[in-house]
Length: 175
Image 1: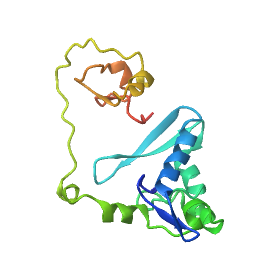
Image 2: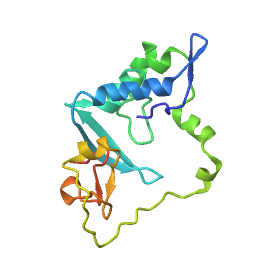
Image 3: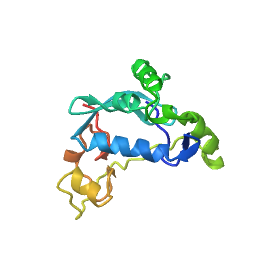
Image 4: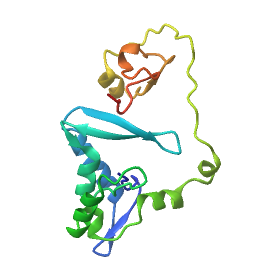
């Protein structure tokens, strides 16, 4: 799915509304229902993981598209195309007015320097220094704004790195 960016505005009833903030709020509401589980499906052009995420069996992408707060991202899957059509027909969310597709909005609002910079690679030190910083779990690390934690950073523990990629307390973790 492809949701409006946080700062993106749409129009509804001839008036601007913060559709990006509304989409973020809807996702927050869905995520608050339980633990998020993700299954990586691909990697995009910027090196980011493309995944299907669920909370208590609810597909978050499908729920966002059904609510009209995101578009089916056909580049990676046709899974949500029918859900998008139903949301459009029912005029839910962004379909209740006018909007610019999130991918087009990002292209138009990208910082000039970001357009020319290639994706950053992750440099992971081979030796893990001892640290006096300790988080009992990822929830505690997130609560203080320390997550994600990279191998070699204070507070990193292999037990918190569920997929063993050197990044503990990622926003999602493949099974």
